[in-house]
Length: 517
Image (cartoon, rainbow, N blue to C red; front, side, top):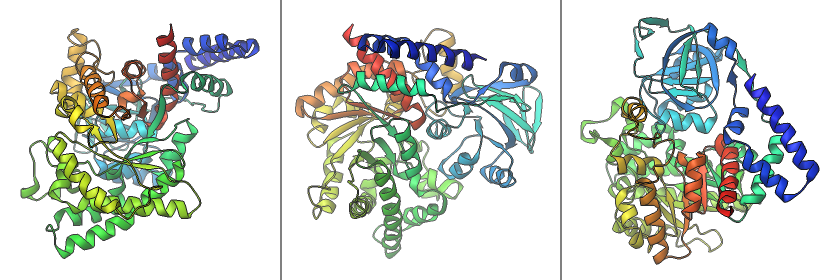
């Protein structure tokens, strides 16, 4: 088995360097081990024998590594029904939204018809270490079955997927289980940490205490992106829906905000406490309204392109009390964590800023809410750089930002004019095959275009504020080639899904070694 051969090679390599016990020997090993080996050891893999015995249904985008098998379920409710019986489930659907996250967490794997590397299904699956294949555009779900290229699979039948290759099969594949407790891997990553120390920090994208604890186990040094919209799902969904549908300034709005604040305070306290004393960057609500309202969205709130519509700072400006409430919730959470005997450490990040006056206005509201906070607990206030205009005007935005964090998923989408949800599976795969693009820019950063925007923003932002902290919280923060570029561009930290943290630790060390050659 490939994983077994790779592991034996790694064990021999680390053992030899440990015996020699010199910095040179350790650096040689860190530079030699491919990051792909680390990734393969962290996830279940399909045995070659089992895939040959199964019928290939189709191929999509390999969105989250690892292999999985289970009963095909066409909704999150079906996943819960299957798992309640003690059986394994694979969620198969057109696309996912935050409303599906309860079922997604319980699934062994996820398959979607639409979407790409930066789609909701892909990002969430990577964060939770769940294998996923997205953008299987030939797949059709109808009448209780899957139809693809003449093949039909009924809901309730077994299917399998390989999130490392993008393949989806009918039937149940045999899996080779991963083993995260490998002493040699732990040693390798400790050597990598020594090399990158003082150069590039590794944080994780995490939204719950469970995710934060997992990230710490994988070696994260903080949370670079805590997405507060993920805290409004499940039993909290009616609270945010009530706020959205309430009239601005109404008694209904005030009541819903108070309920939201109490829920948010509890959730934020759990995350900050789990990560304390390491830093946690709290991104205020960013999601477009349709993700919370779905089919129930009133006509007056419908948008043709919601990902470029009323979300992030724009929503905050329309509904002023939203970010004020979240700020009060965070300050309450920090007090709660401190009173519990821990040292809280959190910053506030304002998303989707394109114009410094947006940041000026919203920051003034946040500052008003922070007026009663002591200096010790007072968070820094920064912004995401995820629109081309924000990158172009970084020099002025840095006047009002304590830090920048590049949202490279949206920045890539907007620099290229590619819809990250619609175009990836069809157009980008063809572009790569035809040599128009050398790689998928949602997987590996486009150095020439998006990378130029990042470097320009860093250089000009630091003209205004030489101490400006720079992070990256898009999924490029877990891609080795992107990490090398970002390190050379002057980024202070990268943040990625918890399961990609070990890969980022090794890649960051290799970037440091390359720069010293």
